[in-house]
Image (cartoon, rainbow over all chains, first blue to last red; front, top):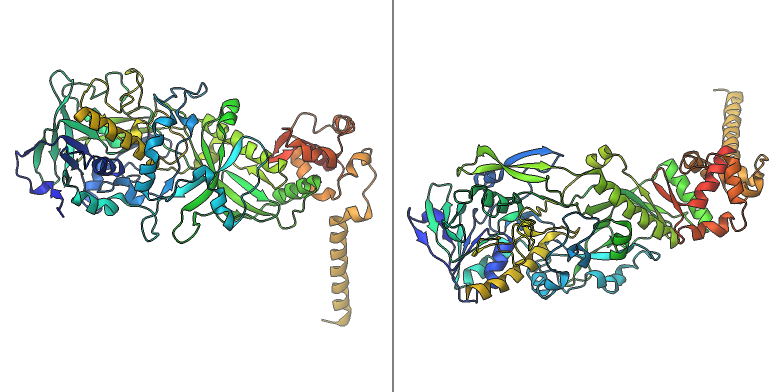
Length: 501
Length: 116
C-alpha cells in the first residue's frame, strides 16, 4: 500500500505532470479520484491540509463578514483530508425534481438539466456516504415498526425522510478522509499529495486552457503542477476564491468575464423554534425528533415535513424541511387554543403534548450575496475573502406559508395544531443558525452570462478546467448538499472519462 | 395559634378553592344570559374559548363586532360542531397569535371573549 506524498518534502522547482489534478481533498475530490482510479489516467489529488486538523492551515480560511450575522469563514469548513465531512452531521436527502426546474417565482432559477440527469449517480453517491438502502420518500414502511407517522390531511406537505451517513460499526457519519484513506493509498494511479495549497491557476496566454498550477506549502516549498485537466473541488468559498485570485491572464479572475464568480452565495438557513407542534394524542413516533436506526444494521432515518411540488407552484414557495425538535410547555394562551380547538373538533386533547419545530430552508438566489477579495493576505500571500451576507424578509414570510399549510393539514386530520413562532425580522435573526452549506458561487448555466460553468461543470471558455461541488448549484433546494454534490461529481467523472480519453 | 384561628384559616382556604372551582367550572352551573346564548351555548367550556378570543378578536375584520359575528354564525350550517371540523379541510383557517385555527373556532372564541 502506497503512502501519501507530502508536499513539504518536494524539492523546489519540482514539476508534476499528471493527467488530472484535483484541487481539494474533500468529499468531491476524494470521490472523483476514486471514481477515476481505474480509468488509467494519472491523478494528483492536491490537499492543502494533512490527515488531521492543523490551526495554521485552517487559518488560511479566515476572512471578513458583513451584513447578517454568519458563521466565521474559518468556522464552517475544515481544511484537511476529508474536508468538511470531518464535522458534518451526516444528513442525506436527494434534491427534489422541482429544485432543478426554472421556477417563475424564483429569480435566476433553473438547472441546465433535470433530476433525471443525476438519477444514475445517486446509488453510487449513496454508497459513498454509507447511508444504507435508498429509501427517502419510501421510508415509511421501514420505519413503521417504531410507530405510525402523523397522518396529514390532503394538502401541500407530505412526510419525507432524511437518511444518515453511517460508517461501518454504526458510528455517525462517514468522515471521507478517514474512511477512504486506505482506498486512496491502494489506488494505483492516484497520488494524494498533502499540505499542497494551490495558490494560482495559470492560464495559457489565450486564456483557453489551464497551463499549470502554482502550489505552495506553509513550510515554504513552492512547486508546479502541469496537468492535462484540472478539477477545482475545494468548497463553495474556496472554489470562487481560487478563480478570483488567478487573475494574471483574465484580469477579473478565471471564469469571471461576466462578474459572476463569488456571487449568488447561499446556505441553508436552519432557524430554531420556528413553530410549535401540538399533537392531541400526545403520541409522536421517535423518528421525528431524532435520527434513529431502524435495526442494528439498517438505515438511520428521521422524518420531516416537505412541501409538494404542486403546492410550491401554487403558493410560490421554495424548498423547506420542517423538523420536530424538543418537547416544550405551552403558555396559557397555547393551552386555551388547544382546549378550544380540540373541543370544537370533537377530539380528546387531555394528553396533548407540544414540540418545537425547526427547519432547513432554501434561500432565493441573490447576486448581491457574494464573496469578494480583500486587501488582507493569508500566510501564503493570497487575498482573503469577504462575505456580504444577507437574507430577505421574503424568505421568512415564504416559509411561514408552508408552516401554516402544515397546521391546516394537521387540523383537517384532527390530529394536531401548529403555532407559527416568528414573524418579525428580529425574531427570525435571533433564532438563526446556518447549515454551513456553501452554495452557488460558481453557478451552472449553459449561458456564460448566467453561469460560471456549463452543464458539464466546465468553466466557460476554459477547455480543461472543471468545478466540482455545491458551488455550481444554480439553485439550492433545502436538502443537505453532500449527497447531491457527490452525484454531480460522479457525473463529472463520466464526462472526464470521455474528454480525457 | 388558637383553635379559632385555625378554623378560620381553613374556612378561608375552602372558600377560596370553592370560588376558584366555581370560576373555572362556571359552565357546570350555567353562564350569565347574553344576547348570543344560542351561539355561546355551543361552547362546552367558555373559559379557554374566552382566553383565546381575547386575541382572536383582532384576527379578522368583523371578529370584534358581536352583531357582525352573530349574523355570520347564525347562518344555516354554521354550528360550531358542524363547521369547525370542516374548516381546515376546506381551507378556512386563520392565524391567532401564531396559532393556525379553524376560522369558526376563532369566531366563536372572539364572541365568547365579549361575554366572559
